Amino acid sequence: MNPSPRPRRIVYPGTFDPITLGHEDLVRRAVELFDEVVVAVAAETPKTTIFPLADRVALAESCLAGIPGVRVRPFQGLLLHLLAEEGVRVILRGLRAVSDFEHEFQLASIQRRMDLHVETLFLMTSDAYTFLSSSLVREISRLGGDVGAFVQPVVADALRQRFAPAEEKRIE
Ligand code: ADP
Image (cartoon, rainbow, N blue to C red):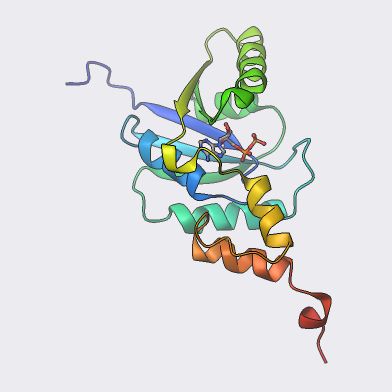
């Protein structure tokens, strides 16, 4: 029995450019642990994105629609402000390899410095997705490769459209 009457909720922030099966796996595992997982798609990111915010949100919504207890939303500005707005104090992040650790450790430490009540929870990637990143998927797709094993069909279609040769996009 859960002694706390408060719902247990967690925010999963990221760029999701685009959402992959690795992200989705993390969400599926998190909903087993929390009542609600809020997938927060960042409007402002140091990365140059290939999809605008609205598309990144729509693709995440479409991929996660079948999972109860998941909500997708965009967010702008500081993650801490989003946490306050949502009334959530736990952040979900994924760790794939040692190479993720340094960056994630820095992020988690700074969030803590800014607000002591905030905790970052890390889930390790599932074996099948250790190698998988949005950047790899973008690169394969840009070069005309098949990304069907790494993303849902709706995302593969969006990537195909995004990187379609100019002559295919041109209206004759
Ligand atoms: P950000 O720009 O915030 O890193 P991403 O969309 O690239 O946004 O990633 C969001 C989170 O999801 C990060 O914590 C990242 O480590 C995690 N993640 C990405 N791909 C995977 C994967 N294949 N397995 C587990 N975690 C992943």
